[in-house]
Amino acid sequence: MIADGASADKAVLRRAALARRAALDPRDVAAAGPALASALAPLLAGAGIVAAYLSAGTEPPTGPLLELLGDRRLLLPVLRPDADLDWAVWEGRSEPGPRGTSAPPGPRLGVDAIAGCDVVVVPALAVDRRGVRLGRGGGSYDRALARARGTVVALLHPGELVDRLPEDPHDARVDAAATPVAGLVRLSSKMRP
Image 1 (spheres, rainbow, N blue to C red):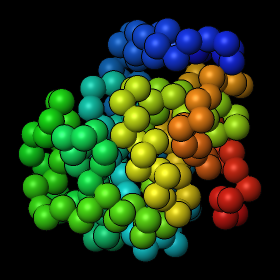
Image 2 (image 1 turned 45 degrees about the vertical axis):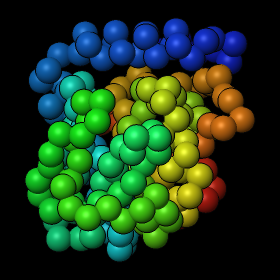
Image 3 (image 1 turned 90 degrees about the horizontal axis):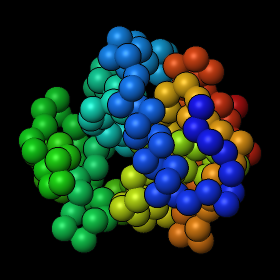
Image 4 (image 1 turned 120 degrees about the vertical axis):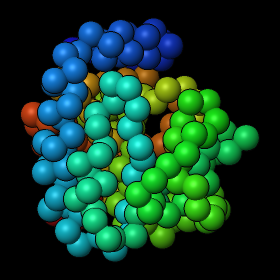
């Protein structure tokens, strides 16, 4: 479990979360993907356009989620030089991007493309019960989520949904979190039933 505490420093919390993830059993990480896709299936059933991401390392795997979405219009982020996120349509392949990321090679749709998504699935190191998201610290998703209009869901491993995280004024909250054990947990009244 990640240590809760509003007074805790985000950098300390990030290091602890990354160390915890590094110690995860690779079989548990792999098993998280299908469980998360199953948990999100009811929410995604009525979504026309979805934004998601390509997981890396010990992040909860997004491969099964991308497969679940099939032929639906799916946008994935492309990290820009200014650390904001552009978007491109997922067509089943990726290429290396900046800072160790992967991205679809297709045309860029612009930073505002996220506004047209019904559901936005984002990475997080932890999320609290108010929807405060602890990311990697670059601010890319905070900027992008300020433009989002759809339901925002963070993917987590067990133990990463906590009571309280420190929050800065620029932090964008999420509407829900999903873990392989707890399933989809609603955190906002904005989220449809």
